[in-house]
Image (cartoon, rainbow, N blue to C red; front, top):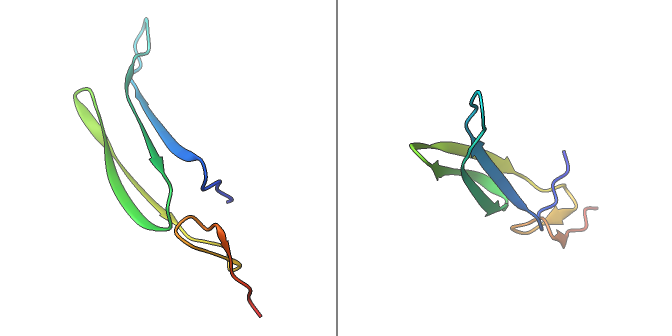
Length: 71
């Protein structure tokens, strides 16, 4: 999978009702390399998010934005 590390990860938490679905909360986070865990808090609770981001062999840096030559 390819990820645009210059964009933010946006998470929205919605409820599902018979009449109207309501946005309970939203959260944005800039992606960076490594393993990460964080909690997005919303009304009456939260959601724990875990992700791992690693760079292609020719890229390096906290956001995979630097070229690294590989012989």
